[in-house]
Amino acid sequence: MPSPSIWPDRFSPLVRFAILLLVALVLRCDTFGDPNLHGDEVFYHTVGIAMHHGALPYVDLWDRKPFGLFAIYYLITAISTAPLAYQLVATLFAAATASTIDSIATRLRPEAGREVGGLLAGICYLLWLAPLQGFGGQSPVFYNLFIALAALLVLRAMPALREGRAPAVAALAMLLAGLGIAIKTTALFEGAFLGLVCGWTLWRSSAPRGRVVCAVLLWMALGAVPTLLIAGGYAASGHWPEFWHAMVVSNLAKTPHALTSLIRLGIMAVMLLPFLAIASFGLRLTAPEPRRFVLLWLIAAFAGLCAVPNFYLHYGMPLLVPLCIAAAPFLALRGRLWMVVIAALSFVLAPPFDFAHTRQSRAAIAELVATVRAHVGRGPLLSYDGPPQIYRLTGQPLITPLVFPTHLSHLIEKNVSQFSTLDETRRLLALRPGAVVMAEPIRNAPVNEETHRLVLDYVGRHCRLIKAVRVPERLGTDAIVVWGDCRG
Image 1 (tube, rainbow, N blue to C red):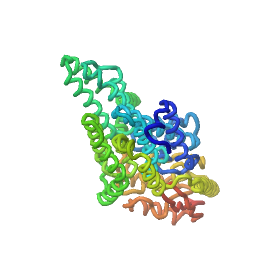
Image 2 (image 1 turned 180 degrees about the vertical axis):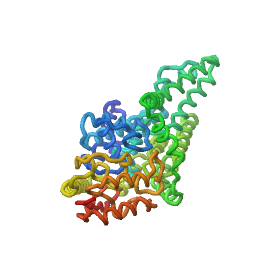
Image 3 (image 1 turned 90 degrees about the vertical axis):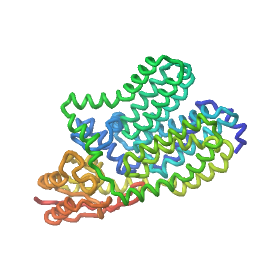
Image 4 (image 1 turned 180 degrees about the horizontal axis):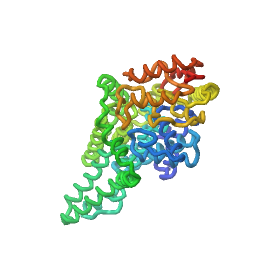
């Protein structure tokens, strides 16, 4: 590799983005077309498609995720319902976020050599998405871009804010942060941090206090606009109770399983350890003011992580953005060595170029679909802790709003929605499903034994065991059992 003092200066911003996009495509190309990458994004994809047929999130299909995430999948599936479509869009978002990291890192460190640090920071972000389960269309892959762009615009607004002016880019930054919040509610902490930075900087200037208050109120309103518009739409359609329950009540009702949450937190800490190390080295090389900005950003992102203390690995992706920015000065000095280290660790933890896995996933889903079609009879189909896309792929109707695999089978999801989990399971079995698809064993512990016993009793009395299909996700392979030819 040429020396860092020479090669980055030749690259225009467009070329730098092209490099990052190429890296993103290379790292993620083996996932393209995989119909079962991860249960979360398969569900979002299913909801996006169902919305084109009149389904309304929280009413016809239930989850706690904000509407903005489903809106993204709705827009993508308007172009194509193939999984490849959302995977390509997610790749563009990942590359754009990496490019924004590059721009922020370059702006925060104006000394010579800053260009290589920013570019390598962006590449590090792309390398570490897969180890944090960001290999596809998880929600942080999308909302990280809005928060990073908002942070970049805040930095661009700082000179004007110090002079006592409230520039339009500050307002745009708050709107972008609001869009991020509409995709993932915990982004509120990062959005609030950016708003406070703008407000505090303007307050310390010579601007009249009245102008400062008006600017801050405008910024708050802009940050709230996306969520308020969505909430207003649900209220106008008569579905405010469902929206409020999904966004507020259900999040308060769900109690994390302490032991598994702590285990996941420990795993996340280990996974982020290399970035914590290079970020700490980089912050030592950073001037006091930009160092303070990045540290406060990290604290805000960590507060968002702790606000929903389930600590699934992909929840750590928002931390990755400020960590990579913090690491940029160190990467500018030790970039070649540390890029090798980060790339090697990434490839060990989440091996790329596993095209065989995608072929196996396609074949397994095709086998599962063919088996259900052959043995569902007059239907309907019930998927109990099975792949949510199975309804659409087999042409069977969505018979319950609780389509996400854990909502019927996982104990911590019991009665979290507006539906009684037990009553909903009884209602579904009263429909006399012609086939039941379920994981064996149930994939998420602790299991809701009430609903599990009911389903086992139904298939034992009314159905034949047809086949167990080994269906791979990117993180592992599950045995999905098809009980078919059921008779009421």
